[in-house]
Image (cartoon, rainbow, N blue to C red; front, side, top):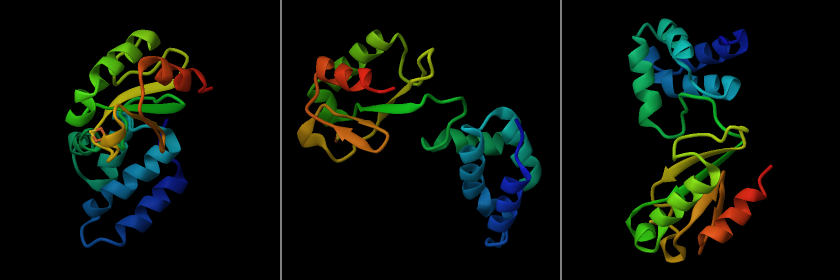
Length: 155
Ligand code: FES
């Protein structure tokens, strides 16, 4: 799938705001991802042409920021905080349990496209560890059964 004229126009408008067009790469990635769901290698090539940079320069940005995805995503993003304070209270065990129940590993998406699972850095909820977030909603003081109740409720 390629970038629509609407997204290309939006990118051009963003570029006009910066002294060097490369400054608009982040907004361009947001626009492209909002339209296509993720930034594929093909999309990176298109953006590279627009920005007159190499596709690898685009993919480096995609892989650096966890808000950009290089592959199709599930309908729900589930992120388990596995930073040290949460890990001291069982977050890594929780993550392994969720992986086993969903049949995927962190970074993967369930076969039905329902859930993409990932690690998260500290979300400032250490006092309520272990915790995870589904989209923008925090769920705290979890054990595997509580976590699976939440995940089973996601359509
Ligand atoms: S370490 Fe998990 S919320 Fe802070």
